Length: 165
Image 1 (cartoon, helix red, strand yellow):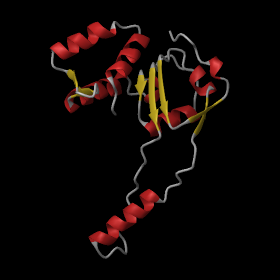
Image 2 (spheres, helix red, strand yellow):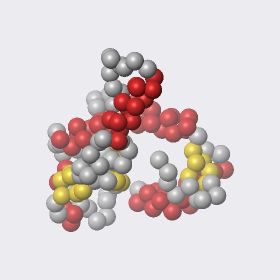
Image 3 (cartoon, helix red, strand yellow):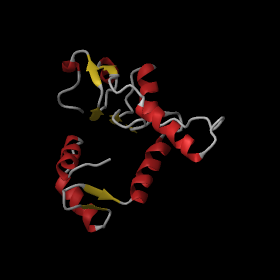
Image 4 (cartoon, helix red, strand yellow):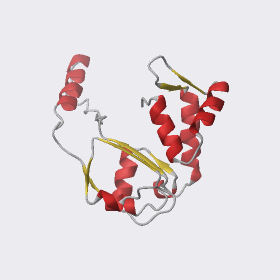
């Protein structure tokens, strides 16, 4: 996931943090840096450590975590939604495609196998639109970050808090 310095500052300020001070400390500790195009760089191990910390917050499932980014978990949660006060951030990106591995049965060569993967990947319906109701997010009482890409929101956007708690 690529994110610019300005986007990081917006997210941190939206969470009530002093963005400039937080970024200065992270840079001084060599935990992050900004590349020449102003894109944030973070070592994979730092990212993975943060991911693990969120996953360990609650063994009870995604509805009890503070942050969600796995598309499958988010969609399952939204489909079975009840009011929650745990979720503070959601990043949902439908731009990336799932690539399903085809069965190797009947494939006689590596080339045939790769072609079957390519055909399945490119034949997915590009025009299909994912629609999610705004009401799902209204039930998330402490939601402060909602970053959605390639999704159509349905409903009254005024139901979302203008100034998240």
